[in-house]
Length: 442
Image (cartoon, rainbow, N blue to C red; front, top):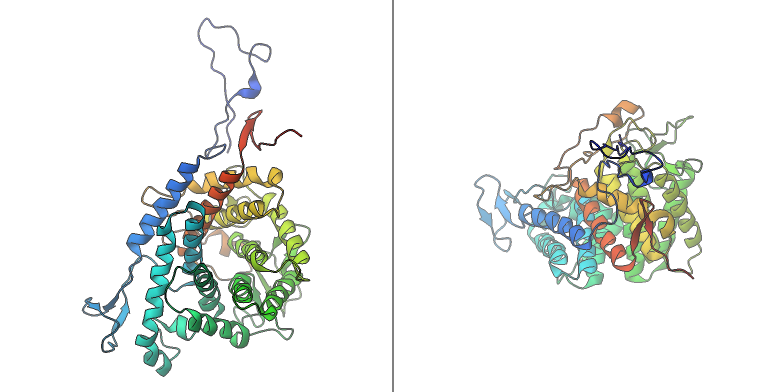
């Protein structure tokens, strides 16, 4: 709850009332910092996350029984695994983290962030020949490189593929990532299950189910492939997927997506799960980043982004966070979705897609909230763990939160980096106690 400022009169002082005191200037008791963050403070948050991740995501093979280091160029060891850290190096969450590190270098000019990504993508590429025979012999086995070399879900493919293409385009990684990129794209294009009209789908938890999450697990990779190759077919497929998901799952009145849609349901329970809506708006942003200006699908994607941003902004809490179920204010406040929205709002403002007067204050309020969840050692707190699909509220209300939920780190990096860009290009002021974008008089 937000508390109002209270006047405490000193003994013998004139009575404080509306006639003697500017009550409108009383300072509220905000639950998170209010106002424009300092550029150096945003950078410190970014750096804390980097330092923690650099220390806790090793790039080394070890023998899972002896725990001794293994050199990948030698004779193959059946017990070889990636040395365990706090997070997995080839998960979709880490695809987002790799992209976040690349953006952090772009925003700050500090190469160490991109080096984090380049070092790990190099490590992954180096393991392909070492593990090739093992993965080929049993593509379904839970071997260290199975998700890279033999993906069997969009979760395996899309985010990692997009990050690899971004790293390749940036030029900082020396490894040839193209074979892995092509393998991922081949999975998305030819192997993932689809509805009759070609919409990417799953057969869980029910037959012919659309997961909003799958927009992000496919479309950014397709869009980046279009940018990498110049082949229009990838852009066309990306636009098609967004369009066909949205006509089924986007609530035009609320400006929000439902989490899941099942072809066999006569009624579709709408649970507007925050992180899935994050994947939805992040997909639109990533697509617009590379979709050619003259592509016939671009105006509709831009309109969708604006409608979604308006719906999300209307659901922001007074503390700056968004709720686990966006339109249910008794559900808990969740960090990863808040970070995604902050990034998407800031990026859309920086690109000229959203009105900064309308959205910049909400963006900074969200970042100030996010910053309170980054600990001094760089962990991101308040993040919902991995979540399937449910059709009752209790399922979403009571999902655990954990600082080792990998979903929080990439979005926090993206949000911090993009806010840095915004603060470099725009100025703000406190006008009558509220944060406002500064405008020059005409």
